[in-house]
Image (cartoon, rainbow, N blue to C red; front, side):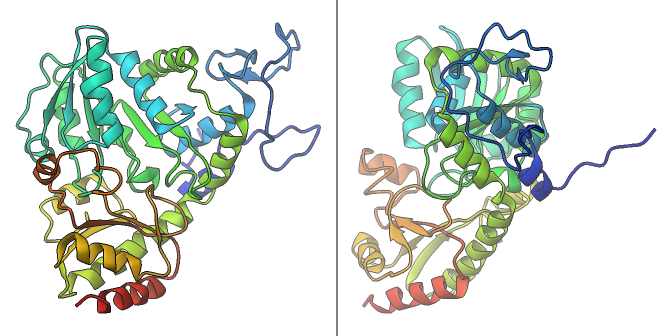
Length: 394
């Protein structure tokens, strides 16, 4: 029997899931801007919606352009089951509400994306789903029990201090009680990490970031093991978090270059890390690929690349950080991340501005912490730009 060899990442990224219609000879999947479809469709050769295995009926339920994206993403995540959403938060909420019911408890890392933390601490609790929080350090040490929890929620790389969660160890402990592990793997991307291969049940991404890669859409993605797919799809259908076909088209186009872009993101961040590590005006650097990082061994076990994010503190605190950003010419001072252009931001002014200073410091976020999302520019230019900005500091 002939054994089919697995296709490489870039081959899958380009060709996976593409909807080819022989009668048209189209090379790329078309944009199906349909709200509705002929139904019942008695055509024997009718295309089937992978969420129902029936002909398409309504785009909130499923759409051919969305399906092409979802099948492409599923193959990149080494599964058959994936869905797209109108945002990363829609993917998170739909997933949580498909797994947890009133009276259930979630065990989550404490270093969460702000909107996710707000959902767990406020919205989920309003409907009777409570959460307990554990530090990434305690999670990685195995100093927790999955008993009594309906879900364990982690981020593969946290924002903005770039701690790395040990998904392998977490999934092993969770497996003793058959507790599903849900991973927000946005910072890693499927190029650097496939959570399902590490033991997770669901992998979630803000597709706005690395997956689409061009800072021009809002999108969420979810890949899952078989038993989680249909319940999450039902929640997407009910909550209405299905993306528009044009957003799906743009995301699929972005995915085609994900591997190439991530190679450059990984390289750029590594080179910038090396530069910042030896700069006397830099007080501290946060980067998963730092051999001095307490998360380095975890990163080596859970990641195949360290990603394009790097955070650092300057001597002089927030005043020095703001002056540094002011003198940069290449990166844009803007929130978000994962695009082809470099972006820089102060979490104290953006993602974590709503937190009290004491809470931020407990998370290791000083007021002068700078978060840098490396784009795909030439790293020599980025470093020269940063050198110039550092020289402006007294």
